Image (cartoon, rainbow, N blue to C red; front, side):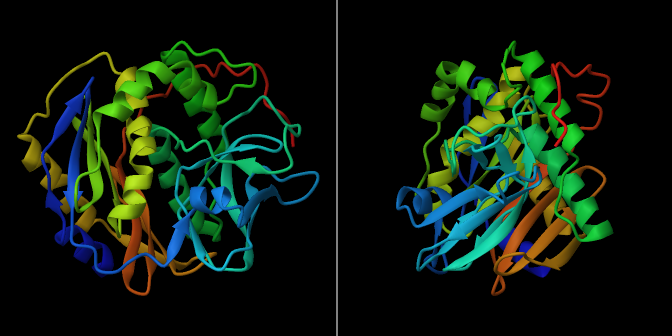
Length: 324
């Protein structure tokens, strides 16, 4: 797709940095315009937006986002929302117009709870770890193509959380993804502190276990800087799961440029967004992802390398899964 191709072509690589099995390569660009929106965290902090269950009884794959402010709000793929009847993650990036309400597609990441803890959701500024985001992105694309719905494979999301919890020795009373982050907070803090945003940085490429796992690109350094720590955590969780510490088979710069070219050439499909703009979906044999296009500019792009078979054959460790 031309917009994604143009975005990729304008990027420049910064100096790679590595910490505990995770390598981050800054993606640099000259911002073309100031964002005319704020992030979800900013909206919640300013109390100009709310995230709620769609009804008193709730609906697992949908939440209600109520933007009461004068500014558009950016909701980013993978963001976790905590509270209400169970914790969820956002299925794809959405830009919500000012003074509007929209139902947003989400996935459950807390299989063992279906009861209110709060009336509204809050953000703990963390994102689903990268391997599960990749699988989710692939299924959202398939579902959108087949039925126009933006839902993930909920059973696979639960199984992914189970496998990650097992790998990292996490025990959770409600089988919550959040407990993975909470119980490894000290180690994750080390990752967060190891990587800082550079001038002109709009994105990053992430390498884990010697392989380029994915890229994340925003249209401006400001939203990227706000998201950097949670993105680092997202990939750090998978770095922590790996027992290997390999370098890439090819020189790092060549590997990153090869992945960017793969993203640029991957077939894409465009769909009207449930918010402002268009949803662009990327789909290939070994790559999945999506982007939000607004007025011919890519507001946010996330693309992942697919790792088939990583968690196949695992026995889910959930004690139960509620019937909703």
